[in-house]
Amino acid sequence: MSLTLSSVLRTRRGRFQPVIPFNLRAGGVVVFDFTESSSDFAQIDINDVAGFSERLFARVAEAELPVGVGRYDEDRVLYRHSPLFDGECERRSVHLGIDLFVMDGTEVMTPLPGHVHSVADNTGLGNYGPTVILEHQLDGIRFWTLYGHLGRHSVVRLEMGQALEAGEEFAVVGDLTENGGWPPHLHFQIVADLLGNSGDFPGVAAPSERERWLGICPDPNLILGIPGL
Image (tube, rainbow, N blue to C red; front, top):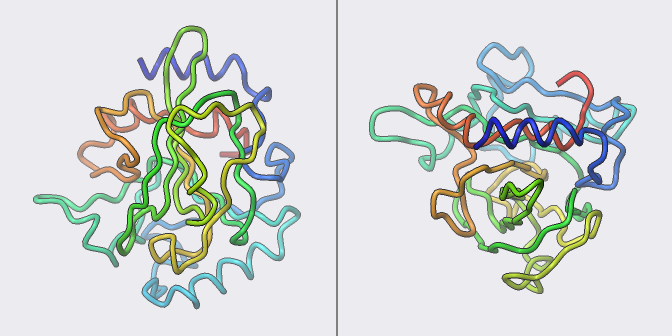
């Protein structure tokens, strides 16, 4: 299904509404490297979230557009600070979404019509914090978009089955005290099969299972349209 979904999304590239109030298709964002080979972040103490945030947003402040981007399908060292990503045999480290680093309180919108599938507060170090999953239909294909690290107060009004129009604001980005202990950002992910989940879905995969999970979670840039990713 993911291949069919990807092809459908490709035919509509450039026609989706933004998920944050910035024209990401214009480019000019800072694209971060969170891999082990990164000269910027490989040695950073990410348990010092305030310091990590300050360093990230100092880079963002220099950009044409005040948005930092964390890449899809990136094998990250960031997940070493939380036991959430420990597997029985292998640590999960391959990112299945795109992160958009913006100031907390930034509005979050739906890129196409849909309805609220589920809402949950996934608490704990490294987790999503407040999370919304929306359900969509395109050309008869059902799929979902996930929005993690939201503001707690902004999601309490959402109800299961609530309809949302394309471009409609439904939440805001949360701060580091409520978003799982991360610098403020939106984790945006496309899901072709929820596998029975509600209010939560893996955003990181084990390297040995990379192909399987990338098949379930197509590239979010098919919707976002950020140049160069």
